[in-house]
Image (cartoon, rainbow, N blue to C red; front, side):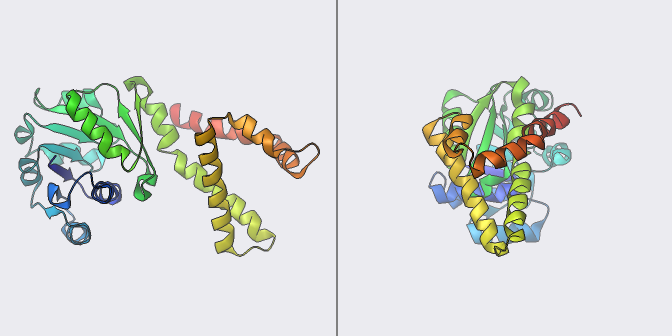
Length: 259
């Protein structure tokens, strides 16, 4: 696969670095264009990929194109490269640019896959939502799925569920970060140094998430394993319930979905 990036911001550079580190792609197989030329040159030097002088040059050099610019920039970014996309595969992580929207803009023989990433991709723990509606051929879909799975976890959702999926995986890291900060503040309140507090809380969240994934036990079962009768944990759980913790989590997603 020869992969062209259109846009090389933080998410794109995280993906490029992850693809290279995983061995799924060589740096020589990646070419990128970004109008922020100084930033692009810096990332190219660090990762070893090729710099293109324009989106058209990047597209012409590749068989697969990954659109990673901001959503409002997509049409302008591809304006001079539309015809060059003919017969190629286009992947997009631009929010809102799903299969149907690209179909209305691009030549009919451009094969499209919409993917929603999240920020943990920057450390190889991304969650990537693949829109079920795709025009990639079977071999391309297999290769692209393997490529993204090398830097995180891939889930396929119907088009109708991409919005709620994005609310959970895309917005979710911010909500987890709020929780990390709050519990670290509590640790600092009772005398633990900030750096140690943050490490303890992050490791606790990471370990708890891994325990659930590897055992596949319901979170309620895992919670009950920690809650001794009359013990400290159940008192803390009761306090969270009194403050509406679970209701607040659901309300955060409702606020996104009902906006």
